[in-house]
Amino acid sequence: MEFPGALLESLRRAQRVAVLTGAGISQESGLRTFRDSQSGIWAKYRPEDLASPEGFRRNPQMVWDWYAWRRLAVEGVRPNAGHYALVQMALHFADFTLITQNVDGLHAAAGTRAPIELHGNIRHVRCSECAARAEHWDESEKQVPRCALCGGLLRPDVVWFGEPLPRAELERALRASTECQVFFSIGTSAIVQPAASLPYAARRTGAIVVEINAESTPLTGAAAFSLRGKSGEVLPALVKALWQ
Ligand code: NAD
Ligand code: ZN
Image 1: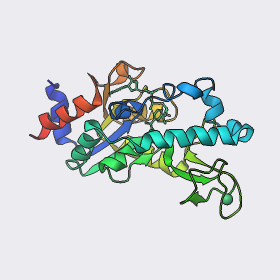
Image 2: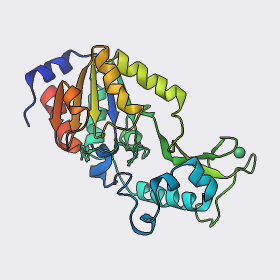
Image 3: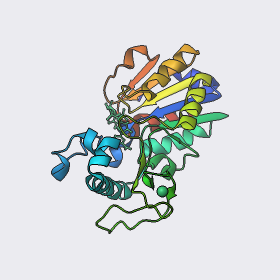
């Protein structure tokens, strides 16, 4: 795989790098995108009913069951070469921030330290009333489990349609994006806000924006470099081209 000399040069000089990832980086681990994951018995429901506060209020059991099913799917998967290449890459920069829209926890599983999980983590569960994190719950229980502190219904600790992103995470992500010299947008369709605005914030403050995606996206035209391909192939090749 050949990379533009100017890109390699910029990366060898860079000290501060930020990376935004989306569902595409987990595709080679076998995880399907949001809409794809609505197969089988779930195909008849709209995502807004399965992943929104209104949907949960209307039918908590259905929402809980859908997430229990997705948790099971995530448990069986491993990080892929793309996740691991980002761990390698981090070693070469004084400042490296990984921001993800994924809820699968695979960046942390690969060894990335303190990834910013903008949309939460599907492996975590919290109370829908008092927000306390639940460490233990009975997955085999047929009913939605309840909070040990207040008795409220437990829910997945992810950001649903119509909910705000966690403020501290969003602020950290914005700071890293506006302070970096190189910004990577990897495996994201770059349309879900506010994450989609991060590459533009980086570009405004002078960063070189690099996109890695299997297809073109609304960001492609605005990126300084657009690398077309699977992240599990492009990222290891890039690490090799840079430092081996
Ligand atoms: P998306 O599904 O909208 O876009 C995925 C992008 O990845 C596409 O542009 C596609 O061309 C690209 N892609 C697919 N396979 C690829 C590969 N092997 N290498 C490189 N690129 C590849 O995903 P999104 O932009 O992350 O936004 C969807 C929303 O759904 C997010 O809010 C996210 O939280 C949620 N989601 C999370 C997961 C997860 O945690 N694994 C999975 C699905 C959806
Ligand atoms: Zn509670």
